Image 1 (cartoon, helix red, strand yellow):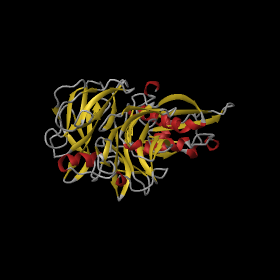
Image 2 (tube, rainbow, N blue to C red; image 1 turned 60 degrees about the vertical axis):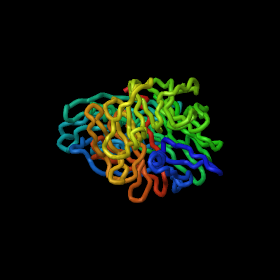
Image 3 (tube, rainbow, N blue to C red; image 1 turned 90 degrees about the vertical axis):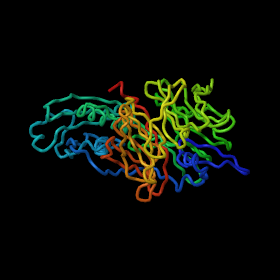
Image 4 (cartoon, rainbow, N blue to C red; image 1 turned 90 degrees about the horizontal axis):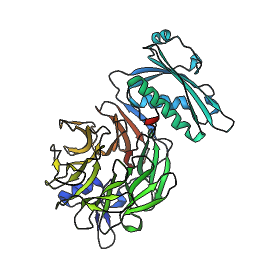
Length: 448
């Protein structure tokens, strides 16, 4: 649903979801807003894993000393993170009684099947904060990485656990993790539309905005401090920006016609949006404060769902200029567009990997809508899912995982998949409909 086109009727606007809207480019169909969400969202996610990598790294994790007196089970959160990504197999080492001061015999642990170990302690300080100390050992390389410390408030204990999991991920794989990041998504509770912000595991969720009107197309600012989205408050689609720490929000685009599909430039100074203020749905670039809207495309088609390349040099977008919805690339300042997708009649929702080398998108395959990934250098395309109703794929900031919305076993869920499609995790709200997940940026990468 990240892009809505508005069709005025005699009584009220009729809303079309992104997929239904782009189908409408061929058939003129539209979907009423009341049908977008089927059931109220519940607060907590359940994580399910299907598929594993060819080789999982066994990591022994002991319960942190003093953890029973902390409001969050830090070692359990670390274990869940590592298990969920599918690259690790967690072994319970709590019976060993280790903490960050331990001196384990790494040869013995190798004999027990552990390639790495984690142990630590949690101490509440006089000011109420918690000092988390932990130690990682690489049993294969016989290496002790030394004691690390994080001092956090109670509210940041989950974040601290995710950062520890990221530290393990990076030390053992050489790649950055993405556990200490956030996702945003949209749900409907009763008659209320809710924009949620949650940890990467779907827990620790916070209600960023609640409205009686639809909220669609959330997009993170590059620094993670703001969300742009489309609000239908007042009966008209408007592009809004909201500061997450203060809740302050302001209108960026409320022109005549449609205002939809916001996406940030890499420097956070501009947004690319779809507007129909001059006739037809076309791409515009506009200041993050709503100033200086400038038209980028001049086609007679519908151009929408634009997103910047990580270097800011290019825009990827969806257009029906060739007769069916397909994905194109053009210079960020405007100019001629190059068509990128040719397999099938329907390819939408482009998202570019942080390294700029891959594009994920939704393609129609034998009537099913599935997540695909394209190598941008070669044009080679791979289907990652076998479900039928996938929407809104978005890369994790480390580029190793994609989150998307789908229907699985009769339920509306959020899922993640590895880039080879072998490792999947389900973040599900029972009897709930959740939509439009978007992965936030890595706000700690420079500190790790």
